[in-house]
Amino acid sequence: PRHLLDFQDWTPERLSALLNGADTMTQVLDRPVKKVPALQGVTVCTAFFENSTRTRTSFELAARRMSADVLGFAAGASSLSKGESLRDTVETLTAYKVDAYIVRHHAAGAAHLVARYSGKPVINAGDGRRAHPTQALLDAYTIRQEYGTLEGKKVAIIGDIRHSRVARSNAELLPKLGAQVVLCGPATLLPPGLAALPGVTLTTDAREAVRGAHAVMALRLQQERMNAGYLASLPEYAGAYQVNEALMQEAEEGAIVLHPGPINRDLELSGDVADGPRSRILKQVENGQAVRMSVLYHLLVGREQA
Ligand code: CP
Image (cartoon, rainbow, N blue to C red; front, top):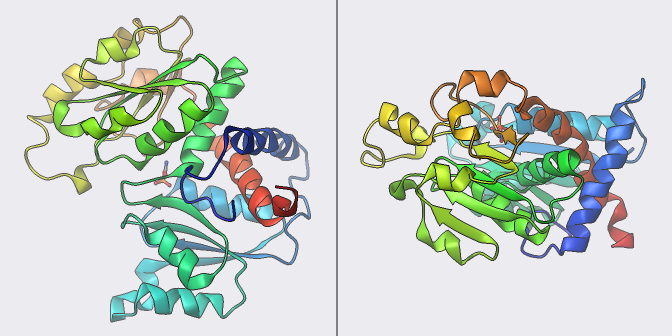
């Protein structure tokens, strides 16, 4: 595929190739000089219309470590506030001979629009509640690093599924790689339609979700996207759905804990588990760089071999 907007056009073989590529990039990042010339002469624009800490910084580093030039576009400091359209903004940036875009936007489908307006390869860095494919890839990579394979692994994803592009992308990706996904949260935050995805089941019972799981992912309550009425109260939510050591006792021995960040500590995830031996949260962050280097390589260099 020319873009990474979601996983619709991505076969398991191509997805595995991305993860294998991340192994190679991890070796690059372990060297004293963490740089390769693969993207010399290429200009990548990080177009962020919504806030980010991890995704923006890791894409920027990933591109620089592959010797690309990076044009950072931050919507908050731009002329969008003067009424300029997305199309005029993208056409303006493309006039600088940008070769590829990395796009985060609060609206689902915005990355598709940037692909249409620019005619360049686009990587979706999170569009509304729809998709966040590189997050799911780094989650898959982190689980694969732990167990050697995704095949036959059970992954429980607990929290605000309704508003989560991370949950949707993982529900699309992990079964393609052989894992079984259980999505869990209060009924108001658990859209029943997601049960139609192959390899995905839903439950409102956190203990049932975690039982026998190899990896448990806690998700942030996205209160900025919520209407009143989704939750009775935050303490009641934490009482039923917080990922803590008591809940983790239901999981497979040695099960790992993931969180895409940012964390609301002691709400969806207890601080002791976040900082404890099960946690792979900072490993996810570290892996994000290698996975994004691999995605950039496959879309911008390795396309001819696809
Ligand atoms: N996981 C994630 O997308 O984090 P940021 O919003 O900080 O990029």
